[in-house]
Structures are given as structure tokens and as C-alpha cells.
Length: 279
Image (cartoon, rainbow, N blue to C red; front, side):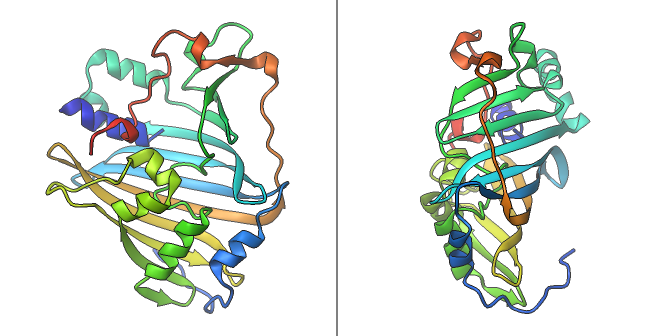
């Protein structure tokens, strides 16, 4: 039972309302789609916190770039750094605790539509001499540890439509995790068909979205509480977007520095993320 809770924390850690300007007149979804073009993109800065009973167990900080293609996100280049609380580490078996501590540091991940290339703290202990990147098969690139992905047109359209409060260019609302899973590939990749509460119902994803005068997302904050066995786990993600329309070119690492995941020892990069949990 405890291992499921640990998996949820470690996996996801692998994530004051300012005064708002006047209501953005532009359609946010149209504004987003208009920015989809090869060689263009944005900068992102994310913070994911995972807590239980008001105590933060894990924090993930991420910074990087998101590159667009004609139909959406094409590539991402994200650096992340996790941090775990002493209370969380103390509940782990000593061997697991030491293994986790080895991965605390900066990890860089470059993602394309087919592969993810990983370098840094999470993989350095498994790499043979001369190799600095691990390549693994990947799905659609995601902009980091965010509950609500502001670069998915269907997701953005739904959360804008469901907003129950609109003050200036700040929108607030909620959506059931099961509904979000149906429209958001990135949420579905992490939480399957949707995370649930203790009574088996779909969890509620509360969100706040800030738009600029052009209707483009500049910040999205979201929270969700689920139950792993009898332990309530709260995810809180805060993503900030800047540099809309800027030049972004993200390339795969040099082939000579890359090793395929399959060439490493079995289980070397096993990641007990939420996608593997039976919520």
C-alpha cells in the first residue's frame, strides 16, 4: 500500500492572484492555433507540488522551451529539478531512499513526436563512458508537469467554456478528471482514464487561467486531490508561459552521445509514475 503512495509522489515529481488587465477580446483557442508554426514557440516555467495533509512531500521545478509545428506542440526541451521532504524520504526503505537521492539534481529532457532524450541526474549513474543521453520511445511531447496543458486546443477550449468565474482576463473553474482525461492526451498519459477520490468518484480539477490582451495563456494554475489507498494526495501545478511567437529550434542530441534505453540494464530507468497506478 505504501509503495503506491510513494510511486504517486515520485512519478509526478518526475507537477496571490495579480491584478488583471481588461478582458481579452480575442478567442483564446484561435489565438493559440494562430501561433502554431514550425520554428516558433514559447518559454515555460513550471512548479509542481505534491502534498498530503497540508505537508509538501515533493516539489518539481521546470524551465525550458516548447517548439510548435503546424498542428501543435512538436518538440520540447525541459530541465527539471525535484526536491523531496525529509518526512517523505524517511518513510522509504533505506535502499530506495538512497537510490532516490542519487537522482536529485538537474535532468534535461528533449522530446519529439517519437523519442525522448534524457540527460543528467536521473540517468547519469546508468550511462556507459562516452554517452550522455538515453533515448526512449515517447508519445506526444508535453510541456512539463502540468495538470492542465494550455497548448492542447481541445483542452483549452473546454476549460475556457467551463469557467464559472471571469474577472477581467482571469478565468476560474473546474472539470472532472474523467472528462479531462477524454480530451487531454498529456493528462491521460499521467492519470489514465482519470484519477479518483476515496469514494471512487472522479476527482475535481480546479483551475485558474490568466490570459493576456491577445487572448494567449500566460499562466495556468490547477489542483487535484486523489486517494491512493486511504492517503489523500494533492497535486498543484503552476505553469507560466512567455515569449509567444519567438524563435524556438529544438534538435535531437548528437547520435554519438546517445544510447538506447534497451541497451541499459533491465529496469534501469523504471519510473513508478501515476500512469502505472490503478486509481
